[in-house]
Image (cartoon, rainbow, N blue to C red; front, side, top):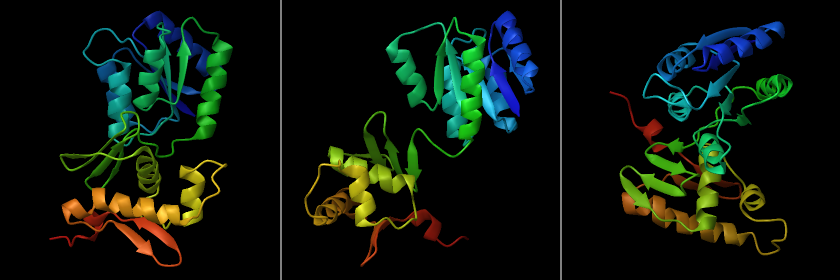
Length: 232
């Protein structure tokens, strides 16, 4: 297993590297954000230990993580910080980090969290969802198609997020109910049809699109229309 450590304190970086190597990991070390970003983009790491406050350059840990995710690099990220503010933890998780550890920390806990992240794997899990020119940001509750913002209700947003996490896949009414309505809901499944219809009037019709498809007797599918365009 290969791990990237991005830590501007050479003493701390060396301590983390030695403990990880003692556990049998191969470890690369970067002491600033620019180097860490380059290494993270160029190498298939199994996990990244990333300090938030990186001196010596304009790129901090938040920026590194955001740019890695934007570049479709999905290695699990454990963020390290001396700041224990809730706002920092929330920001780190929202830009794509998978876990958070506050300094000072126990090396046994760091190793346990690294092991857990490696078990989780490097599956695709973008902080911002994109299907064609449709973009959804769960953290900011923001949707847009191209440059135009789209206002949705909370339920419409929840449905669209679920569609965008499974683009091209047919989702049944039951699946949509289970993911967008709570256990106590006892109404008719036609409520899904109503909300999907409302979604169409907001994300498709004003733009002359038909990306949200109905497959009668089966369910619904969000199609990436850009993939249907013939290549020149």
